[in-house]
Length: 174
Image 1 (tube, rainbow, N blue to C red):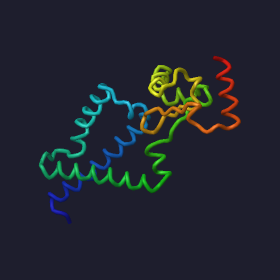
Image 2 (cartoon, rainbow, N blue to C red):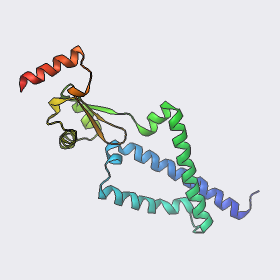
Image 3 (cartoon, rainbow, N blue to C red):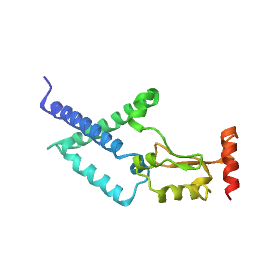
Image 4 (cartoon, one colour):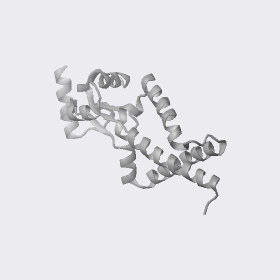
């Protein structure tokens, strides 16, 4: 049987692990845009969330050892999640998600925009940041897993019959 102090520290490690998983799932459910584009509101929420779960992790133990066990547990779990994500594509897909295609051949994919909670203003801002005036000039726009939007112009991709025809259509509309 474990001594009382070791039992308490083991309980802290277990509580911390449960809270880590709950917060990880909550962040994953919140979506790519929320994680990638942190606003002051998001930072405030994150700070309050961390403060609110502190007692759930350590319970009544406010000792240095209790805090060290909670911190060590978080670091070890984060390391393990990163290691498993690096070697297991299915797990990585579950934890990080997948990129989402927002624009294809100059056409906005509204269903993906709605699913990812990306507004037209956000898309247009990302296009401007990449030197693209309008979505019709974009061959592809992709919401990456980190919340950023990558944009490829027709000039950036190797011409194929499909992109060549679409590019000619775009140039003829000008």
